Length: 306
Ligand code: ADP
Image (tube, protein in one colour):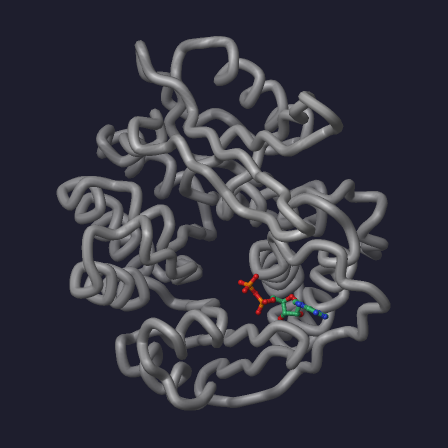
């Protein structure tokens, strides 16, 4: 089976320490990370497209070149005059990482402002992926536009996959965060939450409660990730549990969930075997947490394609 996978969201410039007075530049963002791992795991007859908005300056040019180099399609990326990508910096103090963000005015905040382009991209693709972060960075009006378009895709029978990726700091308040994330899940066929986020922010007392809540909202399928504890799946109402892989030394958990999502979707689209896809995704995520950075080089992932 071939097809087109579309990931919608924001990628930022990442600055991390690279020795005294030096910074290393990279690119990362939850939905781009998932596109990166989906591209790594899908066979060549699938295309992976990234939907975002960028500026018209040098850093946006570099990002586009980076996506192309990775085999990620840029056909639906809009360039906005006078804008630039968002930026974040990772600081290390006594082994603890902390993050500073400059993203309030990023081009990606307007990614859904061109409703026609959004519709064109979604109609051209078979599988749509977005996250709670994608919804959080949009104006209310643009979030409604995106939700309406993914609802159309779901109604047309496409797989619409959503990771709530709950980040309270990106939202103006708890009520709007709860309501919009619930709308995102309602517009989706497959929800891929992380249990610790759901327990903290939605008060779920168990994984079963998370599954129940998202199924009640209208998602047919749910994959609840729970770090080193493994993942619990509910597909068409059939539950299964897939343990995590043992990791010798966890180096950096950035992108664990994003890589799991990309690898899971890639394998699921090919085989329609959800537990086997989750076992494959657990292997990929285990390699990702064993390395530094959000985007681990594909040759380090040990992927055997179907
Ligand atoms: P998120 O990054 O969204 O919080 P999780 O922490 O639940 O996501 O991790 C996603 C997946 O990554 C898990 O389902 C598991 O397969 C893998 N993973 C994460 N942490 C570990 C770990 N310490 N050991 C092994 N696998 C892990």
